Length: 256
Image 1: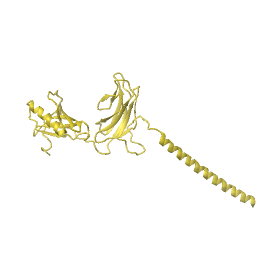
Image 2: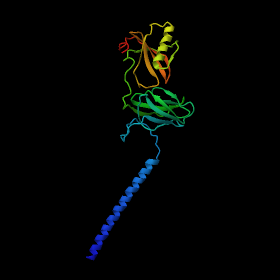
Image 3: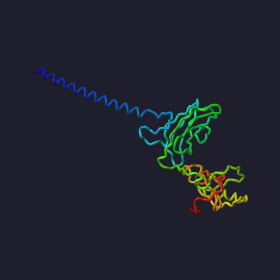
Image 4: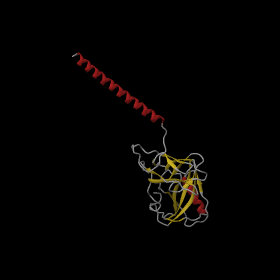
């Protein structure tokens, strides 16, 4: 009987020891995982246009690095659009004269990191690094628009199907607001005796509403005539003529 009691006590002790050891192992694992999450830096990944698998909200800026071999890396394969467009923070280790190509065009790599706002619509944004003699592999980043900032309207929808891109001989307009810059541009056309007489203008709600470059439509009372691009911020805006419209009626009433 004494041997049986001793065996029972021994088994109970062993069970308790095993349970304590298992608990200590779990605590150690948790501390290790916490330290890893605190110390590991964000990593660049090759973009494939996928939505974040863990369900986290997409970042509103994506870091883009072009290395010395024109290989491109991104901090996230998904980016959320803002009212001003798609933000990419560009860093270059590429040779002098390299470009970042972004589907809509391309710009020279900056000497130091810069944040660019791209007018990229929701969908796939294809990025690559290039020089005159070589282009690196394309990396795709998915642009999402949870804030519904992007407008699918086109100039044709707004009564200005593009009819040509002339070389304009008129000076641009300036002003403290976009409206004043457009009014000054119209005044410059009037001073040249342009026909038709331009009396009406409207901001074209296309693309991103807060983009640095905004498109305006200018025309006569009943007919659209041309587009203009307004750039600037604060109290310093400039308006420049851009494209001719195929003469079309305004789809909205004046001052609507």
